[in-house]
Length: 496
Image 1 (tube, rainbow, N blue to C red):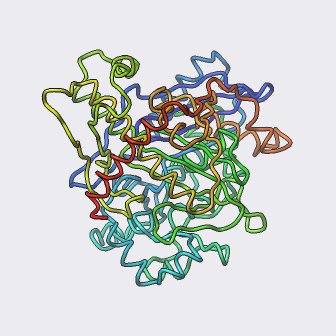
Image 2: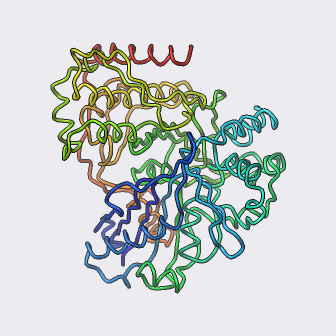
């Protein structure tokens, strides 16, 4: 018996198969091999076609099945992880009405600010744990204001994972965790936030039926089974946004535990056992995968938009043809900590929450034509993202999160020793790298939902720790000096 996990990212779709008997991953596949396109018709916009996610999910599943060489009829359940904060609109025939407005789209910042003031800051913080910000609810209001004829055709609003569940089951459903990330959930009253819906002019009928994060979320339809290559009738048992799911995959389910990831965006995600919010809205709080009103589990999420996408940009624009990230790492070891005073501010991927939703763009500072070479840019770009993590971690500490260890997966930016060592040293916390992925976590979530494990902790245990990056005390001052110079640059840009 096997379980399939799908991770619907903005760069690619991953599929993982986990053996239900051993709880070991037997295959992880990605499709496409190169990053999926984002459409950006105007500055600050970011859209993708949901139908492409589904097509690629089917291809990734087939790739995983072929890699594992198992009988597709042995797959017993499906779990879904997905890029957070997106907006998918479907009509009564379940047809997509427009491209999805995805997580890094910043068109709705002003709408969210108006709602924050109109509803009241205190009420938003106490009930929603967040300002409406640039999240799904605000994006829906943008559609209502700017595309009213299209808005009138909306039957249901969906998050990206809800859309994949619709394609799998033919049913429109969502979760409390998903509604909280869209800023639709009232934590005090444990219900859809009617006051928010009324203020923004939404009919509550657009909210799909709510299903548990772990449990019966529908069955694979005959049509979907034919397309994805599995047997009809198997259960979809788990669904969560990528960051709560990433935390689950890394075993971060209890208060005080912290996960991090460095993909297209960068994230640090800690768990608290009570509602917590930031009065400055620099970080956000959502229902974690195992949250209940009786036993709260709140995920506090720090997000940096300009992370992996910035480093990828540097590679595409500056690295020689055929030079990979491993090659860049080797080259930049010749450059000292601080990149010989070349500094990069990486915030070029839309509005940044840790900067109170300001969009300041990326910056290169202190460039010296006679001294700095490509390898300096490589290191300065990587350090700029690492410094952004530290800037955010300092905010989390202000809110009472005790960060003594970070758990990360063996992918993306944390595969860089320079990147990981910089964060570990400045945070004074070891980084524990675990051999897992979000897709594997989703597969295990589905297995747990079917009663395959006695506890959630058992379901996510057992992955090997493959590396630990310890703080480097002897080099702390060099890292600190470079970071303080970077912070000074940032403060000048922010006029702080």
